[in-house]
Length: 176
Ligand code: GDP
Ligand code: MG
Image 1 (cartoon, protein in one colour):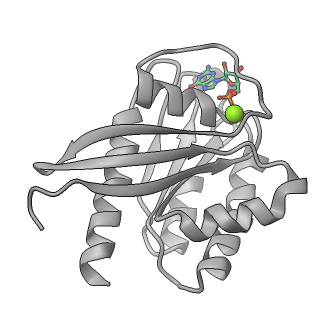
Image 2 (tube, protein in one colour; image 1 turned 135 degrees about the horizontal axis):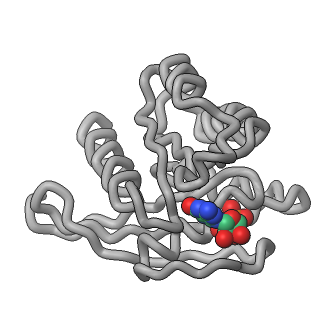
């Protein structure tokens, strides 16, 4: 009901090096740190206001090493919303999102899950390898999943992707 604090589990997924840890740190702590240990998987809490409601986000920044598929199943099951992150400088990282989404849908046994497609490193325009159209095409093929380009480095669109995901989860809850 109105006024209560909802808790939402968000999972940040994507290939290694796309900027999942940098995005999470910018969102949670408002800091830019150039380099994180790529093997560290950790979760963070942040309270945000969405449409006048206070939401507690529990954010898992994954490190996605293949040995831990059992772990992956667990967080895909408990996750209520997913940021699927690629880098605009690498087409293969966009391609990897399709497998991730398939896994999420299979494990959750549903055909609708709150997702945002995130094309990170938008500040590296000179190294762009993925056009916006390419990502928009993917988003449409998934039923118009919201898509944003972000820069963790410049802190562009960082709050927006988390807010969008939070709104989707709230809407999803209302339907269930
Ligand atoms: P993760 O493996 O997905 O967690 O990726 P990290 O967050 O550790 O970032 C991988 C590398 O990309 C690091 O060298 C970051 O400095 C760099 N990086 C992350 N986000 C951005 C961004 O928005 N712009 C630029 N230019 N570099 C970024
Ligand atoms: Mg990381």
